[in-house]
Image 1 (cartoon, rainbow, N blue to C red):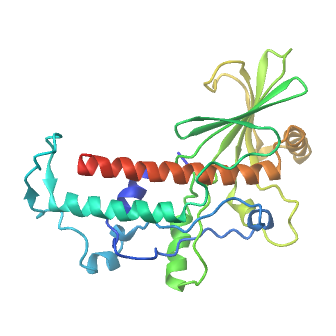
Image 2 (cartoon, rainbow, N blue to C red):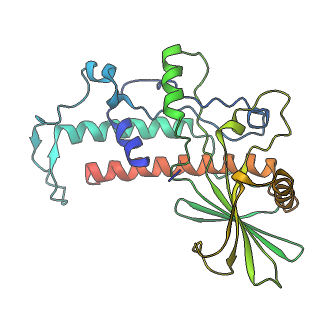
Length: 288
């Protein structure tokens, strides 16, 4: 799982004086996602500049093998190495954090409709609610939640120099657990946002924007997925049964509206965590 460190380090060597970032956008043509209530998006400022020839020719990237070592300041007690590259890195991170905070759309996390309660544990989020004696739990992690084809689409957008504002959306895998009071096991759904469904066009408003990958019964209270429990993979599943499983989730509040709001929430969490990572990285580099 859905490159945080590589993503941030790649961004660190980008031109710090740039006022706008390389255009990088997800092709979200889905009416549901593109509606006013769709998932929060933001301009993408995390560049892969260090991997491009253009960046190398700009003259900005520090000379990694000839960086002059600076003497530690009197107030620094970290005992670590201090170089000109570290100083340039720290100055860049200062500007990068300012830019990310400037484009941050959600200072506070957006609320989920439908009576869901949110609990956070680092990058992992848990949504819970009770429906007529049943407990519904949805968990997801924002790590690696940016689609892997994002960078490829971004480079295409850079070549085309589109006037459109670049956007980024977090689409994490998520697990739905349904617990009944009298049952000995929990019914567990492993769900995701497939790329082909994310890009469906006009006239397909009723299409599901998320899909069930696997279904299994797991022991109640056990956080680990037991490989010894039978797991139903939906790739070769009868469509009638699959539709009933999707309806089962929808009756419990896990539908397109929920999935849309989950993306908005995940995008906000991912952006907060990214900014926090940059701040921690800045403190580490500068020994703050």
